Amino acid sequence: MNYKVIRNEKYDFLGQSYALSYPNLHKYPATMIPQIGIELLKELNISRGKLLDPYCGSGSSFASGLECGLTEMFGFDINPLAVLISSVKFTKVSLNALLEAKAKLRESVFEFAKNEQNNLPLPNITHLDFWFSKTVSQNLTIIKHFIDRIEAENIKRFFLVPFSETVRDCSFTRNNEFKLYKMKSEDILTFNPDVFGVYFKKLNDTLDIYATVYLPKLTEAIKVEVRHTPFQPSEMEFEVVLTSPPYGDSRTTVAYGQFSTLSNEWTGIDYARKIDGMLMGGVKAKQLYTKGVMADCITEISQADLKRALEVSSFYEDLGLSIEQVARSVKKGGKVIYIVGNRTVKNIQLPTDQFIAEKFAENGFKHLITYQRTLSSKAMPSKNSPTNKTGKTVSTMLHEYIVISEKQYPCYDPKG
Ligand SMILES: C[S@@+](CC[C@H](N)C(=O)[O-])C[C@H]1O[C@@H](n2cnc3c(N)ncnc32)[C@H](O)[C@@H]1O
Image 1 (tube, rainbow, N blue to C red):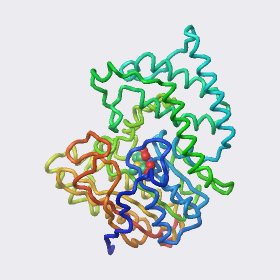
Image 2: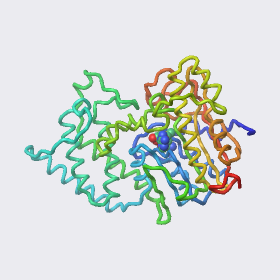
Image 3: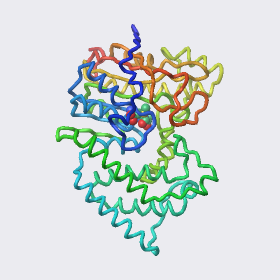
Image 4: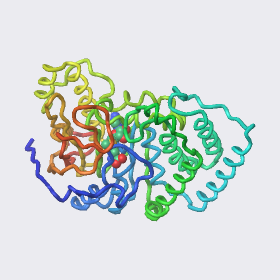
């Protein structure tokens, strides 16, 4: 494979944030700015056909697709919070119906809370008292109770987005970190959030962003489907894949599962505590991954630390399998665009960009180009500690790579 990397400043978007043009409806770690996807789709002349994002997070690639005229977009993410955010963002719901439901919810919640005798059983959340004060738990339970009574699924789901953020903000977690860490005890003493106030303010903000940024773009022609399970190659064929996969396993890079645990538990996901283990690289491999471009790096890491080398192996094993599956669902001539960072483990920088190009090449693709961009606003954990602090960019990972390949063969027939 003739592997070419070109530094391309056009994709830096230095100083631009997600919020600038496409404010998110909910915080999410390591989001991609949609401006990058828009520019890439334009450069590749892609304005029609089905788009897939196999690790869709909060759905930034759908924002890119929408802006470039794509009407059919499909996404998958193991994390239910990601599925919730991205499906709410791109589902058309009547604004009047949302406003009516809001008024009704407000009235029911305050009416119920007025009577101190009213009581609801608290939900079964792991270590509930450790993460929430009694009053906060009771008030969150009241809101959730009345959200659950909303009949229209689309509206109920919409109302769960600000609920999920309220859960995070009113818990004893240190909110500026991705991992679950408890506040200092002196901070807890003075922490007394007004749960209803926080929720209805967030609901108003969510409605505002949805009504002004997303809803106007969601014409009848637009179809965005986001799932908890992958698309099977036999189900559908895609013209383009636009995605930013994780950089490494969740435990030592970005803890998507931990970030979402409390939200997922409160919204009824019974496997919330297991999600980090289900994500890419979540189960430690039994053997070292010693194929292709990763072979030397993983062997070198294993000489310093076998356990780390097995963790790293599991990530590339999973990423490779996932690429195999994605590759099979792309049409002949279809493009795949993966935006990824090369993390450093034990001082060895792992060439994830090359790994992706190599895997697609093994699965019937031709590598077209890899662009290198300077990483600006993506919130990433710091280099030496896996504490996943928001806003810290990694000193060793100042660049991201945009890997672009094209399918050479029709689906199911790698020999053409
Ligand atoms: C870098 S984030 C994507 C962010 C997204 N582009 C955005 O702007 O919000 C990577 C996503 O991959 C998901 N993920 C990790 N392992 C996965 C797997 N095996 N299958 C599907 N999704 C996975 C994580 O839950 C996370 O949402």
